[in-house]
Length: 304
Ligand code: GLU
Image (cartoon, rainbow, N blue to C red; front, top):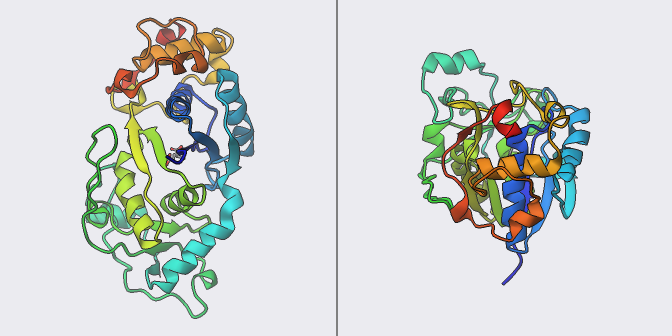
């Protein structure tokens, strides 16, 4: 049997916080428990939100917790292959320019499963200029062919969806020239030979769009597993922008073993928040022991 390949793909849009570390820990435990290779891929292609300082710190913080990776890559180094995918989409006649603002989408009032509004296809049919997509500064979308993607993730979550109906045609290149999330993820997972994607449940509804892209670009489809999230309050993901506490606030109070124990306890892997390490957790790791429900965390309950 060939060896699985996994990846952990944080976006350096803020300092690592407990949610980042739990996602890294679960992804690492999944990979190492099956003897898989694991890549750390910093998804740093959003120039508005990513900062070099965070891209430097996140790998250090993951290493501090005890997570090691076989390779570290940066999505921004892969521009050539992202652009080759745009060439391919253009050759298939699927690309079109679209400058519709969020306000236009809001007016159509078609909510998506992930919040926000569906793109109603307003600019579908607009041609690219002579010379192709490189000769235009407007954002680009791609036409998603209609049809339902049937997909269930490994934890049993039904991800089946017609992504065009649920979200509409996605942006594939942004106004600032950066390739957009879905396309970059589909291309980079395939280029790294990723066979397993383990990530937070907030991304579950993105999977059908990514699977559609994989089919259009003839890329293999990995197995998916989506896990619990840490929440700031009920229904609000612990976000880098809003987190009242990042690692810098926690480290004066907790060493790596204590934080690892708290995270493992929150995830259902330990009955009590006792100090431990990723390596020690590996011994008994099984997804059947990981909690399904999201957990609300506060500074106090992490301190134990
Ligand atoms: N970079 C994304 C994030 O930090 C994760 C992408 C993925 O795992 O597919 O939310």
